Length: 215
Image 1 (cartoon, helix red, strand yellow):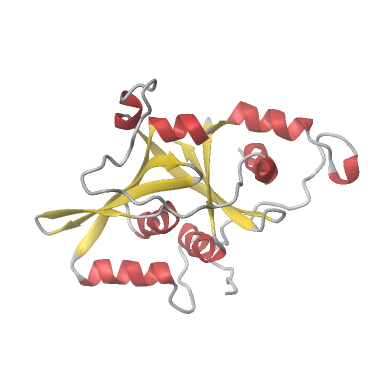
Image 2: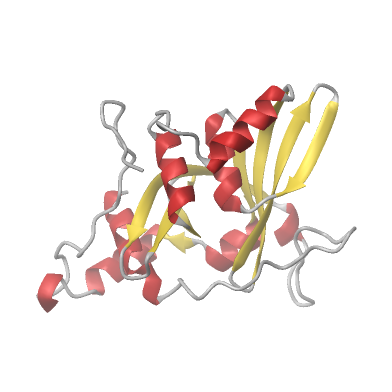
């Protein structure tokens, strides 16, 4: 999987487009919408994902959260800002931030209300924006809130909530491991020395428990 993750360093040229304002969902509107020629089942089929890594994309000045299907054969990169990347990295390492982050506040509010996050879902990709929801259980109540994946993924990692994505999103934005490896092999190495060289930047692995993270 390391080679596949390394290939993500070349994604800015392919996928990191300028962000636009998040689309607003009208009351009663489906969280996932297919066009006329698409199979509606693409919005109904859900695939479970695993958070593997947080990768800094230096040239694009952003970060990618690397999610994969459970078999590791399909990668779904979610581009996030630095604050979300740091929060997710802490959770992957099972470390506490020295000072509360925005995601920590969200977690604290949920816990103080006697609730828990049961599922995070990435529903749709509209333009360049992922849309999604977070599912919360509070006693006998089941709540469903719109949430950007950058925040909800961090909330899922704070507990045992599963992360699922619609087949539509995975079809649109997922990248097969074979495609990433082929891209990596075809790119010039450092200084144009040919394929197989190390990339200019390396993935930011989640820190080990013995390491500290600077904010």
